[in-house]
Length: 178
Image (cartoon, rainbow, N blue to C red; front, side):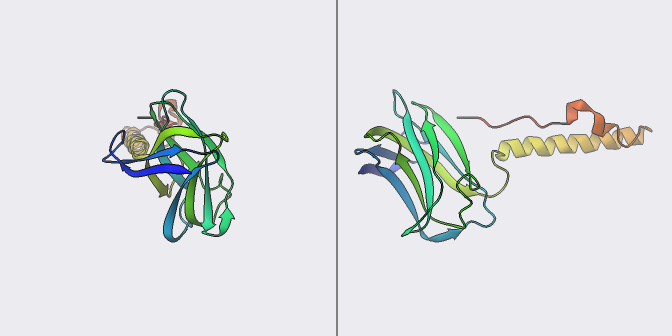
């Protein structure tokens, strides 16, 4: 069994997180939608987790397409001790479920586990790992590239020169942790 507080004030990234303590082996947290969510158009489940201090927590995420079954593949992860870490789980890695009725986070040690925290759990569309900050950087780089290309053309440069500029060829990896 589990002890769960759905409105834990601290620690939390916003006003509240979910505090979970697994009091038995293979215990879990199961978050249920009122009706199964059609996953067409969605690509990832993203959330933040903070593990117990010391040691963190060894956990497993899966989904169910109905209350009665339809389990997805499992994805193992570890919540780091005393620090928030963002996790992005692709629906493809979960076996591309057509619907999600439940998102489950379960013990994977076979023993009780101390309290850990989950926050900002969401189902998203778009590129995995491309958060708002990374998207802003990518847009700025694309605008800079277009500007540079237009400037080179205006002064008589070849149209393709900006495309060959190695400083503009890659966006940086902007994923991080809090």
